[in-house]
Image (cartoon, rainbow, N blue to C red; front, side, top):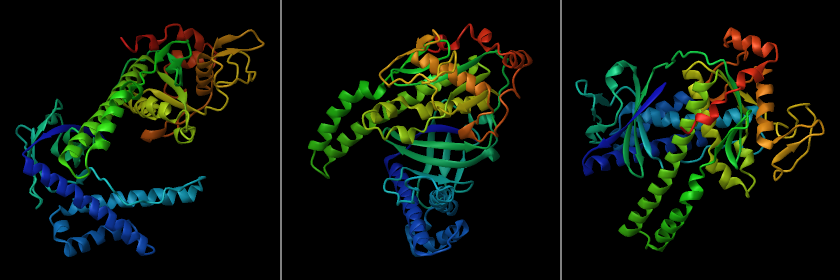
Length: 409
């Protein structure tokens, strides 16, 4: 699936109509969730049928397109199904019991309720009774490259800086590239965003820490405004835009680094970190969230699938403690940044971990995580040169030139 996003230009009354459609989608989602809570044995198709009952009972719900109502019911069911899966797997702690939606920011249409301008493909008209009408699309993407039948869903999203229209297309994007005959092991951290097995580092940009002074000032201004006033609304808008800017900075940074890593290597090994457990440390939670490790992993796996590269998630257990030279465990605290072993090996802590990650990654099938690739043998899709080097234990000879040094060029 491919998602293309455009900024929406419209009149004020059209923006209000979009807000009303979003509120209706939130209402239907919460009603479906309540229906599931009050009735045992309710399934996915029962929620879709319940949408018709809501449309009959509430006039504003009937004004929303029927498939858009079903999309809201599917959102409720996805939360319910996730809760069921967590219960079956018997995960420790909270199972993620579904909650009511408080601040919905999008409404999703399927293949009806909208009509794309087939000539310019820079405008879209919504034909349901909400009165959204024709919206102008602003963006650099060209929808002429895709057939209208490939557009499976259209989503209207409200953000702090305006409204956006997303097109979800059924496209399997795979690009063939020339093999580089290189491998890389990545250790991610806080002092440096990532370190490869050759000791090259990329500094952590710390976007939240950099913009924290401005955010605190805007937060104080927002708290001083009288509740319900227009000045409070304006202050909230400024604060939301500041947070949105930081979020976009993180995304672009992770995307750029992941793209460079994938293009420069045939095999990428990285840590399979459980971010949810790591942020329980209240001393490091803000810094961990600011580093956006999970977002970096998502982009690595996405570009790996797109360009046919192998990405391997390695269990992080003892990757920093074990010696990459002799395998002996050398206990060290988080403040100890240099690995010193009795065998004579003396390395930066993160470089030692990156070497262990690469070694483990090349010796196991690993898994490819977020984007649904089937588990594969790490040697199965490599070139013959790289496969032979791995089997002979000559990986170091292929890593004389590390790509990380050129990531920020």
